[in-house]
Image (cartoon, rainbow, N blue to C red; front, side):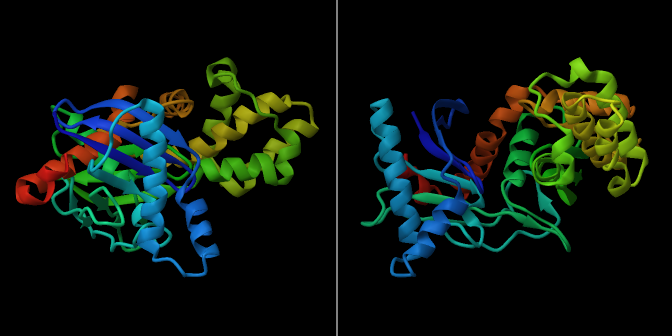
Length: 331
């Protein structure tokens, strides 16, 4: 059985998974909030006395040991495939971005291989990101590769919507990523709801937006059809004039921002749109698209959850085929 450790390392999150390469399944998972930013801050506190790569490898060694101990499994010398912010300016090592167009099979992805050494008892394949003339992404390209790998009838053309703190809309033509946009929807929502004057007019509500469908729908429509910086203030006046409760305003504000993000897709009549969402954001985007008359292919949430490991497997398989000697001894 060939297995590897999948490392999905975000700015504020850290996830290790034991992956069965042949079956493309997750056997076990280890998650914490030791994101790249916090590890980089710790590195800075060392005043450069420690080699940066070695510092991160020491961190990984400790986390892998914790995982192995908690699961009572042997993870010694297992290959790690690492994507996300680990290849950024605050990661293990900054790698150059791949340019556009970039193929969705992973053959042109930027990467660097670190063999087993006396300092680190694992080999590691570090995956880089993608840049356009005015935009960047690290991690979402691996997700996209993984999503496409699961599409058996993909025509080679589509727009892929990946909601999140910084949502990505990615254009694919002839099986090449040809462009993408970043929408700061999640981060702006957090700032407006917690740090702005609007924070006094909203209250966190965990209920599904379906419960507040009419309020959410109004937010979607107004966000899609008005200047965002103007209509945002209606969240405040909704509260002042007693139009909506603070809980309702929470969903109204969510609708405003998601509607503003999605409005550019309304005119995309001739291209298949793929919604790649999971968790709490999933029903919000499904409902938002329905309200705006956008008819996407809504991918199964299980596919989206598996996208990172599927993308890593795709890239790994490409490079195993290209250079068997590098990788096969690492499983």
